[in-house]
Length: 365
Image 1 (cartoon, rainbow, N blue to C red):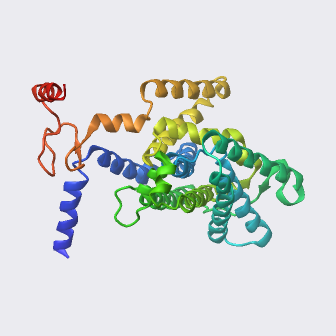
Image 2 (cartoon, one colour):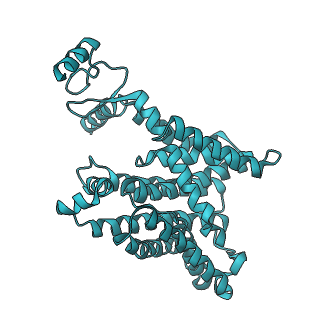
Image 3 (cartoon, rainbow, N blue to C red):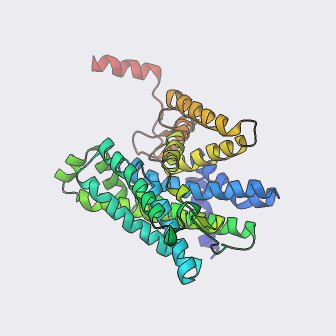
């Protein structure tokens, strides 16, 4: 037992503490765990809880559009349909929310499969326009069957997650962390367990070449749509039961646009980028509501932040920070702290001296 603990500690020291990005991620997770102990303000705790839910929602979009390259402009469809499915099962059948949320997520995955069918024939902006129309269609259905869906008022009086807001926060946080970990392994190109990460990147970079190399692009694109819909559905179910309302606002176009803004600001195709985008921009815009003319100011502020980030950090905030703090070894591809001069694994130099660079440049000429 002691030997195993020592092995885990040595792995932690040699693999986690030596990479700045992993240290930041560890500190962030630790901060989220102790956050309720640092504040007694219910409003701040509410914003943190919503940030956790929206982080899962943003990562699900990044899995589909950032890693697989399938542009989705109507991602609120999966979030909203799962929220409504969970609410209907809760109100009309009286089932436990621990059953209605997973079932609602399965409905989100099924809708994801249906929404993925146009992806077999369309790409880029054309696919995005089709996906953008789907939540608008569902909103029309909701307003038509008002007796069943509640119409504009939505469905209210849902079961609470827990009686305590702190317990609800930890319940949502635990669910979000587990869900994001699954999506991380699904999209990780270096994973030895699941090899879908490389395939998704191949489809994103060149789908024709990926198909020519023997990859079943149809299967993996539909799988990405279903997985993205499932985890967006988990976020939708948690959201509905936390506020105890499932309304048409979850299907609005602005809700689909917000997730894109969060992800672009944080960094697409990174998993941690959308989390950073949500945790920075969402609280900022929520606190802006308390200012005079806050509703108008927060959208202007969000637009300016996005423009500046695209100008100076086109790949996203987290990618910009990562490039400043980390350096990948060109020989063994191991990530190192940028302050190191040699690789921690193979001891190869991380940076070429100016003289060596000049000699190589002369040889090329």
